[in-house]
Amino acid sequence: MIKNKLTCGLIFLFGFVLGIISLTALNVNTNDMYLNMLRSRFRVEQEMLAKKAASDQNIIRVLHHRYNVVSTYANDEFSVFNNLEDSFLLPIQLFILKHVVASIETTKGERVAEGIERGKLAFTLEQAGMIPDAQIEWKKAINLANYGKTIDEFKEYVSSIVATEIQNN
Image 1 (cartoon, rainbow, N blue to C red):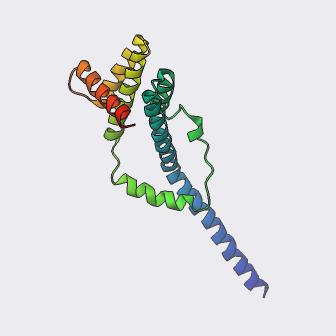
Image 2 (cartoon, rainbow, N blue to C red):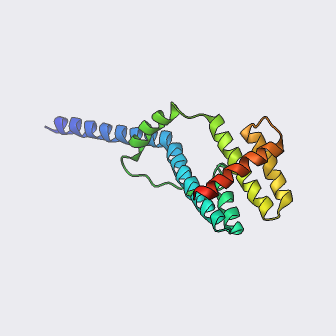
């Protein structure tokens, strides 16, 4: 009888420890995906707020929101993306999502997106009269976007994107 209880206890303990190890492993593999989801949502929200501010012709708010979008590309900018609280099933859901996204994700696309966002920030900095800061951002933007033409053509391209965003808002 005691041997039977001891065996059941060991099986339970082994299963419990194995479950903790499995959930921890899933959590480690999916935290980056969760951070990327938070960043994406924040980028979209800030981009929409920047468009609204641009249509209201509030250059300071546009600068603020454009800077927020650009800052999400740096891993150390927003600490909110580093403190996570997960639900019990979140690691399993994110593990599946991670493999779905991995099949379509490219780092080149993210670099181009960052380049365009930095171009929008540079465009807004120029409008605010902050020319030296804008020039620094233009250089970063054209390098990230891997735009093969001149910087003036890239400025014109970004200008058309901003104008379209304002018009469609």
